[in-house]
Image (cartoon, rainbow, N blue to C red; front, side, top):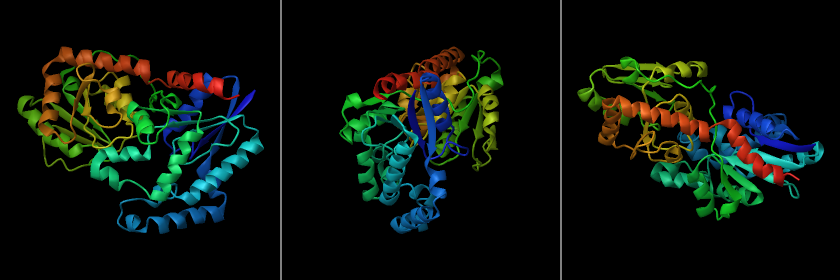
Length: 375
């Protein structure tokens, strides 16, 4: 039986659920392989000197940004050449000790490749993709030294699996990777997949617009609030449900602010909505769009990042430019005006989720390459 090392920063909560979902799906897709999780952060914490050095180096490297609150020490610590080299040595040692025949890593924040072993990457971003978001994206960049380290990661992989076509383009255009080394496999839902939804029929449900995001500003919440004010002029019975954050809505009527809710409550929130709207300004992927599609919702969003892969105008929703308040209001009203269109868009969302955004199908796409490369 072949042994594959599955390297990730961490697979345990509060790690992104996609880490565990990917591991589980790959184990189902590759039953003839033993896939062992190797968590980088827990191993770093068990090495006190290295753990302290990681924090100290990050603090020294990014002091101005950390003091100004533009970056967090948690994120900066995994983006230094020092930690990059530490993970590289650790991965090689673990691969030898465990007798791995191949290595696989989640995301591209480190390099777990080992000379002589087939290596695979699954990521939802490249660092240079940030430049496509203008000034905000440039501000999100880390040091030149870290960017040079990241450039070393991709050529060492047999295949780089990505969640979206914009990241595939970035690997080719920004990093010079051959197109045949990149494969877009998409991603599944973090939440349990619901049964096929019933047609949205209740007026209150049909007229409810759902926003779900923690970062109100970055996710385009202020623009949605302005757009909803315009929507109310045409649809005074429309409702806006805000989940994940607690913004000041300025007394705007028909707004419910739920704040942070448990992941288990989200199916009820999706089921109680008629439209999902997230006019995000920057979006590496946006798993919440996948969850909205699985719940059969029409989607109104912005044409950034991975979103155009998920939302096709005139098929399952509408896309507008970031910050386009009048365009956002028009798109929402067009769906509220036409229940038949809303139902058609919702059905198309569900169909797209079943075709592209199912973890077992995602893993099967990866297994097609890993099965022939992990020898």
